[in-house]
Amino acid sequence: MSKSPDEKSTQSSAVQSGSDDLAGFERAQRSEFRRAWRRFTRYKPGLVALVFIALLIVLALFPGFFAPYDPTEIHSGMRGASPSAEHLIGNDHLGRDLLSRVIFGARTALVVAITATIITSIVGLTIGTVAGYYGSWVDSLLSRIIDAVMAFPLLALVIVLAAILGPSLFNVTLIIGLTFWTTYARVVRADTLSIRERDFVTAARAIGARAPRLIIRHMLPNILGPAIVLASLGIGSIIIFEAALSFLGLGVQPPAASWGRSLSDARPHITRFPHMAIAPGVMITLTVLAFNLVGDGLRDALDPRQRE
Amino acid sequence: MLNYIIRRLLQGLVVMLIVSFATFGLMHLAPGSPIDLMLGEAGRVTDEQIASIERQWGLDRPFHEQYIIWLGNVLQGDLGESVVRRGVPVLDMVSEAAWVTIQLNTLAIALAVGVSLPVGVLAATWRYSRFDYASMVGATLGVALPNFWLGLMLIILFTATLGILPGSGWGSWQQMILPVIVMAVENTAIFARMMRSSTIEVMTQDYVQVAKAKGLAQIPIILRHVVRNSLLPVISVIGWRIAFILSGTIVVETVFGVPGLGRLFITSVDRLDYQVMQGIVLLFAVVVVIGNLLTDLTYAYIDPRIRLS
Image 1 (spheres, rainbow over the protein chains, first blue to last red):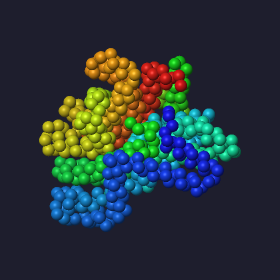
Image 2: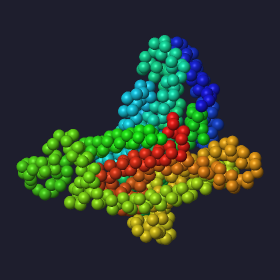
Image 3: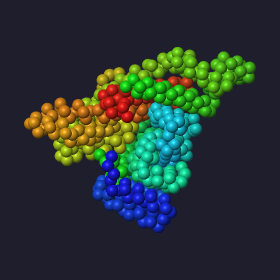
Image 4: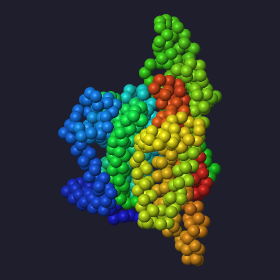
């Protein structure tokens, strides 16, 4: 594997931080960030997707401002009504405004996706670096545990846990966060293994740096790129999982709005009110697509090795 | 090679032990004992009666003893009895449903491979052409489409509007079309992308350049020299995707009312039939472990670089 110029620059920043030259460390990081940003902007679909996600975040932060109605308000006589001037994409089987429910659903999707991604990244990074750094029996043990978790089809595992703990927004987020980390752990472990043998780590160890400092100050900055790429590519599948769980009735509970829940509401009425099933699904697809495209762009920007 | 096989087999065994322990422990965490569920509506039951059933089922023993007894039973093919459908062995319910799931997913994988391989190879051959662009946009979209929504959309189109295909059930070939297509979409997208990038990689190899230089036509080069090598990563990915495929089958079978393992799993979750849930989860995990093991061994057999490192 050949060293790319970006790899060298993060490496030198890590070495500088070893001498506690904090000012120099920050300067190096900023320019690295700027370079990554320039590489990211070269991928146009990723840029468009980023704008879409930004709009979605605004929507999720202030849903009350954008939604024309209360998402749980039942409009009498409007059961399963088709799109009209007052209700732009129609009403659901109870007469609730679909557009408002889709807008409030964005909040559910993003809250679950972002929180679960944070949990999963922390668990994956910790287990991966510990396994890769300590090696020997620690590595074998953690690797077998990773294999065992990966042996369960994730959805089956998540469903069993949701059934046991009871379905709620909090539990769904926690369950997804605590089951999705295996891929991160594997990749981080492999990266740690290869970085552990590099000269700058040996040098830091020679000056007397101990494990936590070695891992956090010297190795982590070099692992972070691929980890961020993985995390961003994982958000899409987390959104699909939350929607799938809610679709199966094991996720967010009514009357809270969730795209998956809306599709589950639509299912029994699919022949009479097909319009109920369209908008929530389009939103899930676009959001997942957007996060995947941003992930592709980040891969080009941060992890040149993985470029297709 | 022998060393590698033994090491992988031992690892697989350890993983299966952890998996069985986790499955058993998970169901143990569940609220409410199976006895409550059975006797829930039966009215008044004395404590002695409960105690006698507990003794009979071994529920009064410590956790680790229960686990060992259960593991012994599982190894003899006894997965217990359904609590909801009283007296029906879980193994019977599971094997009946498994046959349907195997049919569905074999057809879906065959469809995915059949479509994705030629698309991937052609996209790589005509790199940056309109075909390449269109198929890769399709693949990107295919990964982002949630299968349950795609299922609903196809039901709206083919069942509710056109009325040409049934939207639920399993048995006739018409009933198989929609679920098989939905199950195949994500894998088609992933395989096509992989096939394209691995074909592009192989085409830059020296031996392909040599074949070109000695004047071989493009089609024989691709068929004889490129595809055979670019197929490798795709084959292994099929094995490693078994867990994802099983996740998908849970949802797709529920959408289309296909009486397979996925739907049996969801109905047993709804009814809190823990014995059936446990049996299916264990079966899923064992299938994944064996599938991954076989994939790794096949891959190591074909590609010596793996087993020697």
